[in-house]
Figure 1: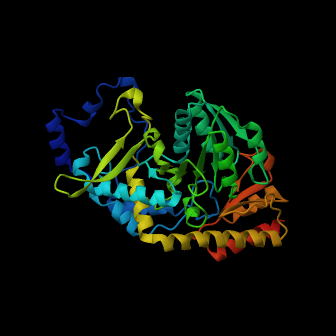
Figure 2: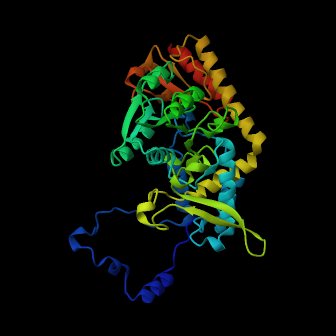
Figure 3: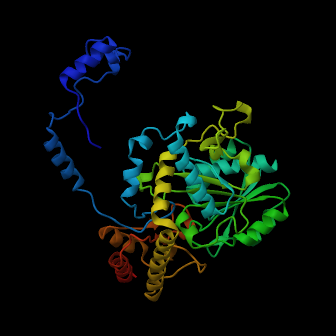
Length: 441
């Protein structure tokens, strides 16, 4: 970010305006013993040119990693038009429609975002929006309990483990009982669901594609849920997959929670990201956040309005669905511009590249003797078992290749890694990964 410093005269003018003589007076309420004096060894000031060179030298020490990590954060190409549009002052400084009657531009952008997400998920409505995928899934936990008047939820262990931890935190304070369902061959054990589901079950939570990249049998699980008048909540962490596989709505989902980072939002060391909640129309009033609608005024002119605002700032506190609901509209705007730029065919091509590259890598590793613990179909990430685990991981690190070790989340998979490819993984980088693993195994 560019920085234009204030001149000495500017500072004196500002100090005079607020009625103090120096900057130290701004901190006069802080006890003297807590104020740092000369402990900070700050170097002498630099000119703009010197500072740029200094920062370039620091940045030059970074290693350029060949990224094969997915697991909820995906390295997709972002067209330059995306940061250009969202950096315009009309959007960048006024992305929350607190005065909706004069915020037609951002309201239209949110309306378009909602439309696109509904088309991808197969749902009737989408909110705008949540902090991230984990908090969105946790909010749907509360939604499901409120809708069904039940307090038991079946939670697949193939959901992102960090999402599960977030759900547990929310559920604890709402007295919601969580029952985790084991997996078999990389997908949720349907026989376990049959054993565990009961008239107390509010919903079954399934991620698709799941944390291992495998495709779940949503249709069968949907039927099991609806037989007990429970809901099917589907979690999606890689929404690019929705361009190729059937939408959750087509497969019987009642609510979809997900992460929209893949669309126009960079990895950014973990945020800010974009939480998604989409649902059937009948559950609209249980959804936290905002909903933008299209209407006409008395003169017949179309306009955009905030149709639904379910936060306690807007309605009676006891009727609020949630107060922890950030309007991540700038991130949603990035997703909107990204999807509009790619178009339906462009998004499909991106998804096909992800699919083809991951299957090429998977097949090459199998041909070179790597074991794959799961045989289920997958989209763009998969699990492989390494014979010489520590040696292989060390060699990958020396070659600046990043993969995800699974032991942290699944002790039973301590000798396995999760590998992901997107359209940004080149053939050369993929072949290098194959050679490193081949050499170690």
